[in-house]
Amino acid sequence: MGYSVNAQRSLTNEYPYTEVLNCLSNPDTIFVCRIHNTAKTQYDIHELALFVYKQNGNWFASTLEKYDSSRKTHWILYDPIKVWGISFEMFADANNEARDYLSTFDWSSYYYCVYFKIANLIVEKEVPGEINEIQQNMPKVSRIFINTFFESHALLREKRVKARFVLRH
Image 1: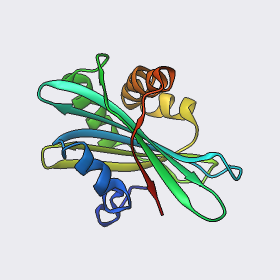
Image 2: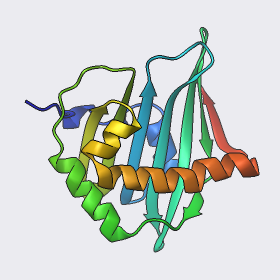
Image 3: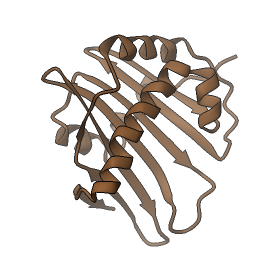
């Protein structure tokens, strides 16, 4: 028996995703991969979300980092950067793969929330495990994640791009 996320519990209803989507001009074609680290220490990144979206015929990626300390939580959204390693066909194939994926949820140290939106079609799943398990179970989704993550987040850190905004809660 598989596990899937109830549509009523969409990550876009959680703080600060509405603010992030507004900042990214609410694209109608978007992939979000949110990685939770439940085996964190006090100053680790608690969550990393990769946003990949199409706007004006080009693909962009941005990352959102969530840090938790004992007193507060804050998020850092990095400026989007244009990415080249993706096509609409890849995106549609990964969307179909995510839609068809079923998983038994085991609450391991890491788990991923995968969210696709193409116009009004939304697919959202929670996937347990580390990146190698995602690569084995959903190779098309992991290809988009890996290509865009290294094209965007790693490059942004190397260039020391300033954060688009910092939210404190």
